[in-house]
Structure formats: structure tokens, C-alpha cells
Image (cartoon, rainbow, N blue to C red):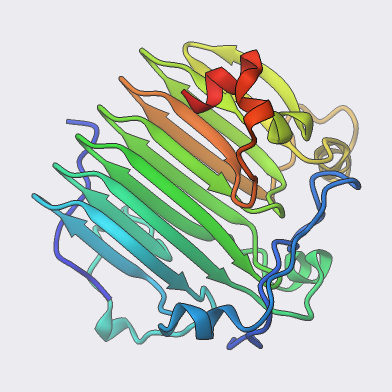
Length: 266
């Protein structure tokens, strides 16, 4: 599916069941994974799609999108790509408006993370951006989803990204004239990797997993690290703030009173 346009900011059917945020290994053993009652697709009242492209020139983008990365759509129904362009499972861009979307990613109920990685290493690729507006993206997981490759960009607006509890991988956050912050709960599950040129790098979840991945790529003397096959989030803006939190976190009065809470929620 496609709505005409291009981005220019830089001038398998699954068994659908209850919604849980548990997909790949949890960020920590103590992390609680809430379970919703009922079929989320029934509540959402819309069928999943895949390879959806929406590009607005003068309008904002707001709403709910359900993406099933395993859903086959014939090539004839997909928009044409440039020779060097990689097709995304979901592409949303507004040139002059804001973007505020709820994303639901469909997975499989019975697959374990290891099985998914072994049988289908592909990531679910999502791009959400605005040239002139704010961007807010909430990512919800239905059952066991494949790893995410999520790119969220804005030239002039702030960015808010809400990730599922299953997120296990890299955050690359950049704000040239603002700051990049995590919620307290997400921060507790993260390893700081440094900040250079306004870009903050963070690993969410068990960092030993990436060490094991690297050691399994060959000899210890190898200077080339193994490519990370888990989740990745890249969020970048020039003039706004970047903030990231879990999608099911509850904003408490207590957290807002703390120094970090003020940074995050102001």
C-alpha cells in the first residue's frame, strides 16, 4: 500500500492472540510484562497490512497502524522503489505536519526468540519522520515479534518514542540543540556506551548477549565485531528533545518530582 511521495529530511500468517510485550528476552529478570485480556486485533478493529507507505505534504499523520511483517503483498501492489532504496515494512513521513501514531506489530505466539533468529533473521523495518513537526511513536508488540529496526527523524521538532518491553538492543539518539533522555525505568535496564557529537549510544537489556554474539563470530583476535541481530532504534532531531520510554510505563507523580523525572517529562 502506498501514498505518493518521497522523504527529504536531509536537503507466514501468525496466530493472533492476546497482547503481551514479551517477545525477545526481557530487558531484566525483574521486568514485569503486563498481559492484556482479549484479542488486540479485534479491539483495534482493523486488518494488518505490510509495506505501507504514507507520505503527506501539508497534513499531519495521526492514527493506528497494524503491521504484519509476514503478510505477503504482491509486487504489483507495492510502490516502486529507487534502485538504492530499501523497502520498509512501514514508512510514514509528513513534510509540514506532525506525526503521532500507535503502531502494533504482529508476531507469532509460539516462536521463541532463538527460533526466530535461526529461521528468519530479518528485522521489521520502520521509518517515521517529519521535516517540520514533532514525532511521537508508540510501538506495541502482539505475541513474539521479530527484532525491530526503527528510525525516527525530525528536523525541527521533538521526538518521543515508546518501545515495547521486549526491546533488546541499541539506542542511537541525537539532538543537535536539545537533549536526549530515557525514563528512569528504561535507564535502569540500560548500559551507557558514551556520547560523541551530540549522539548518545545506549544498549538496552543484557549486554552480555552482544558479547556472546561477538565471540561467536570467530577468533578473539578478530578486529571486526559480529553484526548485532537484535533491536535497534535511531532517533534524531536538530532542534528538539529526544525522549524514550517503555510503552506501558505509567507516569507517576513521584517520578515527576525527581531531577531525572523533570528532565523527561517537562
